[in-house]
Image 1: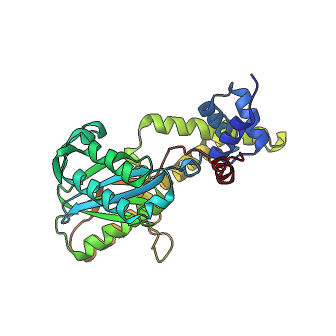
Image 2: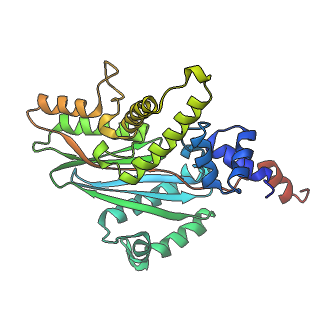
Image 3: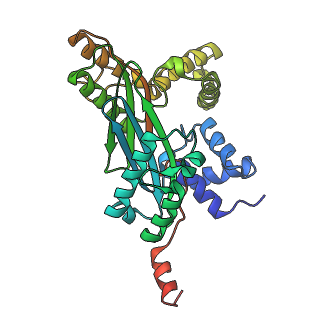
Amino acid sequence: MAITAAQVKELREMTGAGMMECKKALTETGADMEAAVEWLRKNGIMKAAKKASRIAAEGLCMIASDSDQEAAVVEVNSETDFVAQNETFRTYVAKVANQALHTSAADIDAFLAEPWEEDNSKTVNDVLVEMTAVISEKLSIRRFEKVKAEAGCVVSYVHGGGRIGVIVEGVCPAVNDSVKEALYNVAMQVAAMSPKYIAETDIPEDYREHEKEILLAQAIKENDELPEDRRKPQQIIEKMLAGRLVKQFKEICLNDQVYVKAEDGKQSVAQYLAQVGKANGTEVTVKRFVRFEVGEGMEKKADNFAEEVMAQVGKG
């Protein structure tokens, strides 16, 4: 199968691997993009797909809240980043967030079909269509999520003017301003460090096995490339693998991450919350977090602005 330059470019942008490595990966996997990413990881050419390189869609994340007991985050997408600065668009997204705070919809289709709070004669989708005409760009409400406190409070944090929206649900018998501040700091941690899970016990077994397979393939390849007199026996490789897994899982679990404001550069998020709880005569833990980033996991049409202008004046 012939591998195209476009396929190589796409894989390179996804992974950060070299052009020749990308071409080889595609050749080895029959141009299956996901399999090619796995091939690169197993061969130690990359550790993980660069999700950030796939973030291209524009728009805003916004959060609406009801005191400290409930909050909702939404992502509304647009075609260009110029729209995200538009006050009309920002006002509209804030209304969508408020709609999400009060919705009983379980999914985006039901959400779009429900009556618009400000005018029950229209649906959420009807207003979306109207705003598309006003803004003169294709708009879409991509997702929403609500968080309600059960035994504590919820705090929210919006980063980059709406690029990232985070809600954290904290469990605490005695909520006060110090506890809220600590949870707000944790929300900033979530925005910056993008954890996948709260604790290692939350990691699914299939994810564990998948990562173990990847790291084992990397370790074996590294070992095979050593001179024969320096190669390690299988049991040593497995011990090394266990250490690598522990390190990797700490990076993706919120409680185990190094707290970004830690004065000693070592304190974990769990230790930080324990410290705050002790100082306030209570306990503070995180039960749940939601993190939305604009365009996460989406592809954006790669436009050449100069070519577009030339085409519009009839010289393309």
